[in-house]
Amino acid sequence: MIIKLKKQFIIFFILILIPMYIFSSSKIIDINFYETPLKDAIQSIADGSNSIIIIGPEVKGRVTLSVRGLSVDSALELILYGTTYDYKKISEGIYVVGTLEAQNNISMYLNQPNIIKLKYITTENIKNVLSQYGERVKYIDGADFIVVYGNDKIAKKITDTIEKFDKLGNEYIFLYNIYSLTQSAYQAIQQLNYYDFPVKFENSLNFLQKNFTRLTRIEQTGFIETTNYAKFSIGIDFSKLNGQIAIENNLYSLKTSITTQDSTVLNSFSSTQKVGDTIYAAYNINGAFYLIVYNLLPEIQTSLTKPVGTYAKVNTGIEYTNKLLYTAGLSISDKYVQFSYDFNKDFKILFKSDIVSGINGEMEASLDENSKLNTKISFIEEQKFDPFFMLGKVSLGTSLTIKNNELSPELSNLGYNLGLYWGFMKDVSIIKYINFGIGFDLNYDFNKFNILPEFLVKNKLSFDKTLMYLNFKINKNLNYDINGYVSFEF
Image (cartoon, rainbow, N blue to C red; front, side, top):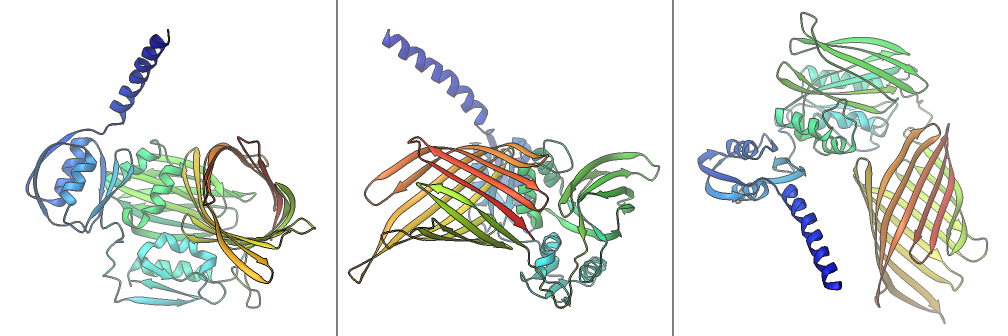
């Protein structure tokens, strides 16, 4: 009976694995190149495998190679071997090839820098706007100057937009930037966004934001001032983009359509976003491909006597990890500091800050009832892929014991925590989000490993400028952590 069950299990396992292997395997191709331009060889691989390969403009050279039975990855590795180029797999069937650290060629601008001195704001106020101009602008976070490259119409329009923001006012500014795309970039965005526009899924947004300079070349930029409603019309490649925006309750609705000279509608879409949020839309206009980035921003109201770029949140709440602690925290820009105390002997301070895009750093110090100082340094990275996101955290713990007037420092543990979350609900009434997750906590205290599976819940509620958070975690030993607090914005 046991043998029979084992055979049934093996057969079932094989039946599951074979289809998984077949469907996960990439297409096998043959390559045969002789003094072929490298761009043409890469495009041939894309055509032969039904893949989308975005080729950087800097890619040059020729290749001679003949091999049979290769995957796309292997083919790219072979033809790029010995060159200064590399490739990156964005998603199944989508690749980027080039000098991956390189940006677009800006040599035409380097001899024409124009410095804009800001009077009332800093770059911190408009960095989400500046990031859309790619290599056309250079700036330092929090500085009072911006360098704009070029003396063409686009550079002049960028300068006008920046100077408009650097004025007092109480109207809205509707900003639009039009970029040209290659066909392969358009197809990649289209596929990652499930053939629907505007761009709204995390996969396609992440792809755009991480490869923005490589994928796009700015063609037009401009802005419209409005109070609550406006219409606009922009000429693009012998066609016309018509649109209207309506603003109500901190939301803006955008409707657009592309029409030809004989008023034939090529495509249209509508979207509603919060004021300040960006809308991305890709268009195929008469065989040319464009990405248009829209944003509605309130004019920044500042004065010479009021510090600019300061946005703060104050938090207060409780946390429970083995014992109850009362917490209070302050967040300014991307910095956060939190104090925790049990009104007895335990005290803890936590500091958080962004390190680079997508990675945060934490430094935590606590003093227990035995006068033992424990510190922990952590690095946290988040990856999003709708409707899921993944959080990874690696940490190093140390301790310092004071006994008999002697200091005894030691490394106490290494830790790694990984959680996979499902976005169960988002932006429904007062509910900002409800996320469920599973994960594990791996801890090494230099004597033994300890691995604990976990179940996780994250909630966020919004009441005007007041936010309420509740986080819950429990592991297989039924040890649980609770973190709940109220946040006030000002």
